[in-house]
Image (cartoon, rainbow, N blue to C red; front, side, top):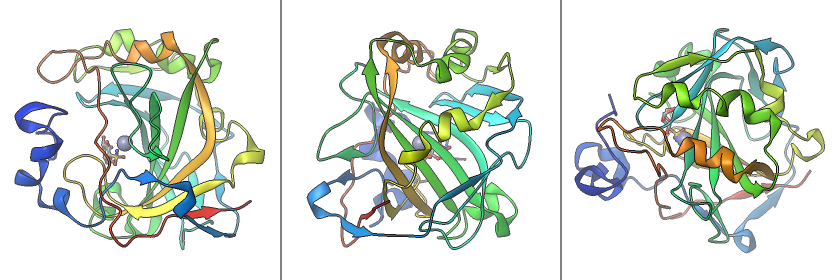
Length: 261
Ligand code: 1SD
Ligand code: ZN
């Protein structure tokens, strides 16, 4: 479930709460991260295991995003930092906008970025992604922000290249080569421990408040052409999926932490 929604009109974000009650909860994502309002902390190192093996992977047009999964069920494990346990990689996907000035879900100092990638992990003890959704510590999501660069980013070319084959919703396509998740998740090991973290929700219906968000401060690069390729994908209605980001939600009484490496 949670497929019956859109990014504007009658089924847009302002109406999600009518069908999906959690969407009007107190701990929703995304948020605007105000750097002057974070609490600096020094957590144990965040660890990503398994990302240095290449895995056969495929992408799917879900109608709301492009989702990448690997054929391996435990391709990567995340632990440490703000996490109490091990979290298993489930999927990654993207959020973007209709131009290069918007598209990210979280904002930093009210600034939006042209794209955001989410790498979704579920708590290993809960055995499956769906079971993890029933628990407030069920998910950990790594969030990456992008800026526009003159040159294409080669790490993303294997994904960008197959987008034209999955323009219609429901289409799925294998990447040509096995994918090294490390090239996407840890582009620069020196910057891996510099991140914001807060508790929040899925940014799409059913908006469950089950996610520990980890937003890296380092920006990755994508060219205008790479970004533009995502905007040719189609929605469930067959229109172009030009934007798929949820507006920011109130922080309420939450604290955003900044891990100082
Ligand atoms: O937008 C995704 C949605 O596609 C689905 O993956 C859901 C469950 O993982 O998560 C949301 S999000 O909160 O990661 N944006
Ligand atoms: Zn997402």
